[in-house]
Length: 114
Length: 109
Image: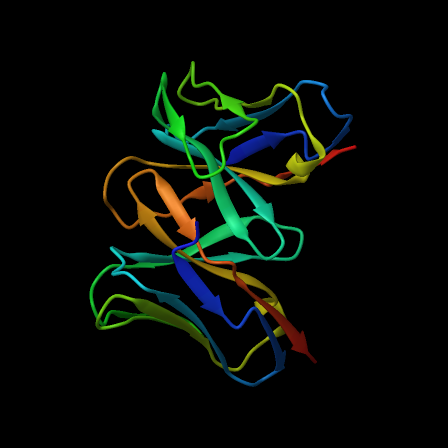
C-alpha cells in the first residue's frame, strides 16, 4: 500500500530534551515536506526537500532541523523542544513534476512539550 | 503567511442540505488544491484546479476556480454525515502548499 508513515503518533516530552519524528514514504516521491497544524492557522510548512541531500526552510523553520540522506526518509529533529512547539505535525510527499497530483500525508504526530 | 483566506471557518449543516465553502486570495493563484481532513485524521487530497473558470465534479462535490483565478469554491449537495470534517484549500507552488485555515463542517442528523 502506497503510504507515508510517521512515528510516533503521540509524544509527550519535556522542554529541552532532543527528539526526532521519523517519516518514511514507499512511493519513490522526490518531494517531501513537514507541516505543523495549529487551531485557526491551518497547516504551515516547516521544511521541505526536493530530493536527497536537498532541503530548504519553509514558513516556520525556527527550532527545527531536517535531513534527507535517503529518498524515502525525511526525519524532523527538535534539538531543544519548547512548549510553543506543541502541535500536530504532518509529513507529506509527492512526485516531482507539474501534474495535477496532490500530496500524500502521513497520519500525523501529536507532540506535547511540557 | 497565509495567502488564501477561507470562509466560513465553521459550517453547521442539516443533513440533506447543501452548503458552499469559499477560498479567496488577493493575488492570482497558479492553481488551487482541495483537501479533506476527517476528525482525528490527516489531510487527503481531493482535487486540483488550474484553469480559469474550471469546474470539476466528484459525485456530490463541485469544485470551481474563479475566472480571475483569485477565488475557488467547494459546493456539497445533499450533505451526509460522511461529509463531516475540515476542508482546506491550498495553492501549490514548487515545493510548497500554502493552506487556508480551513472550514470545519458538522452535520446535524
